Length: 203
Image 1 (cartoon, one colour):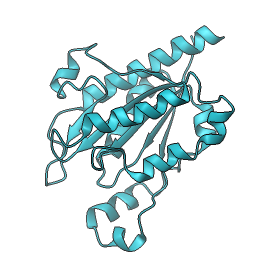
Image 2 (cartoon, rainbow, N blue to C red):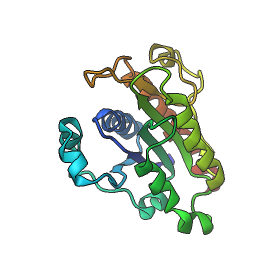
Image 3 (spheres, rainbow, N blue to C red):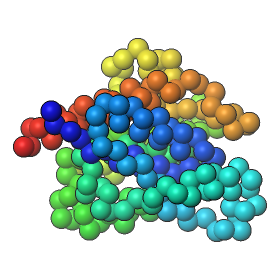
């Protein structure tokens, strides 16, 4: 059986996307993939982070998570991105990570990577879909293969029915409103499966 390498790359300020990444990694591992959970480099000033208890707690909780590198992307057959929205787009931390991959892009090393994305926002129409779509635009430039969940399983409707990727609303208390764990796991399993097909086809 062809085994896929999956990089789960996230940015998280309040812990939500770290949790989504962990669920994705759990399901992908169970599906037989080799998985790396990776964070993107934090860019915010330390003084700003220290002034926000939730942000500070997330930095502490993820301190041992490796920072994603170009080498991780080269290793991966598939990549799942998990990111909050900032004004309907991905945050600068995630955008910079994509922007500094020019070297591997120019040498064709992003071509045929299987990618999927997840997002969060503080309200249902706060940019969740737009954020995922903005990330997929970059993936088209990479020559990647987008494995969006679509409506390929009923579990997606319980999570809000976002066909582009699992997205979740986070309340003022910092807790997720929709029950998205199963949708995240399904999306991860689907991404791994597509990656296995692509990898086997290239062997």
